[in-house]
Image (cartoon, rainbow, N blue to C red; front, side, top):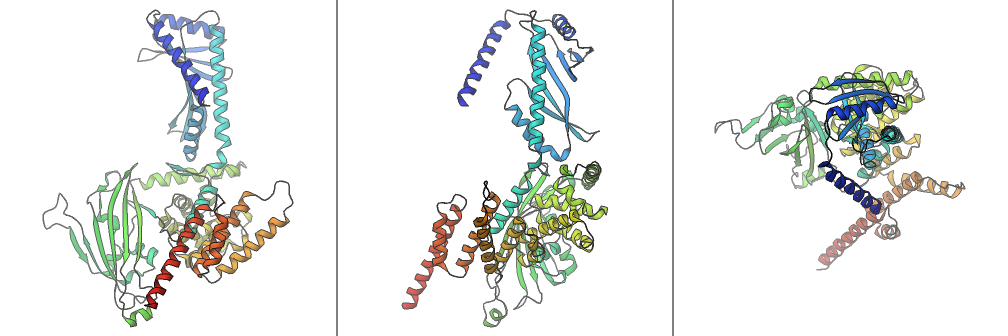
Length: 582
């Protein structure tokens, strides 16, 4: 491949070099170029329309073998070719369009695929740009131009093949991220599988959809809003403030604290005018609730800007729950004396809510058209979900809830998806197979959102609904929440599943053998079993299984990490034993 590219490059450079040398010998004029182009089009049997452009060029519109082409003629050596709007793409497939353009453009030196957005039709138009030289325009000139136009036809077919072959693998997540549903689910499940690493949160708000202290602590800590007793906020002086200013203040009313907009402490302005106003903000919150043994519980929130990316302002929040008192009475009532901390990112979107409403309306109409025309296979994941409930409010929640879930915006997704769940569950008994499938997917999304926020008990509520469905992805999510929550059922369920999968593999006598999904599922179960063995201090058994995995590419990294962890436990045990002997 490298040799072929090198040869092509040398040929291209050679052609460019000869053209450069000939540039001093050949002069071109607009009149002569137009005469040659019109003669060629006449020989090709193409009826053309001539238009003089403001920049001095002349546009020739013509049809050739059913395709609409444009020649841009000037007094230069090259004539530009445009094959416009040979294909159209809906906005939700933007990233697939980008991928297909890149793939095709890597295959061609002269012709390029480009796209433009048609606001009136709300679609992307796809075009091919090319060119040809007016040199060597002898009697075979018409044959050369004909070959070039046929080559453009072939290039357009190549684009269609690439685009349509990748259609099933792409789902539009947002304007910058497109991943397949399978890859996304596997990524999230593997992320949940590794409990020792704190998950990264990416919540987004905007000028009209705010995240308050009440919402924040309800989702993270299950704290009621009436439990807030005192809040202080401190930050460096603002450039526009006096020395007194509002750099530090406190709130004592529980409702005021609960409704305080978190990002208003560090972001000023709304919509496109929003900007960072401080380098850091620290919030201290005292909470007094029935579960806080030993008096009010202290929480601190540290906020710092991390940058601006494509119109969104990103802020890192680090939240820490201070340790409770070490007194005997308190420890007897509270089995988690260690501090609990989170670190995550919030994204402030500068988008107008009306834009999202317009997107929803377009996607809903598009989904209904596809169903009416029996093109259900073309529905995106978000469109499939929004059809679960035809009520506009619930469909809106399903569409954007799925979008937010897909892009890791779990907090926002939960607010919308749980609303859709309670509105849809009453229809489950009377729903058809399609409705049930979508409802199960809704439960899966909600369960995974809770799992990403480490709310495993809540996750199990939704995921155990799916266990009888026998879906690999649903089962993996259920097992992760069982294991990560320390549920006593985890070991038995994992052992039963391993036995069942092994029996299936033993009985499989097909020529193709077991699917890769089944083999990956078995690897997943083995890793979860080792994790449970380590948790139960069955270190020898876990070590033996890890050593078997060292030669397995899918499990090697996990095995090395667990072996190192096992060794650290043994060292700690030895050190404790030595201290006791002394």
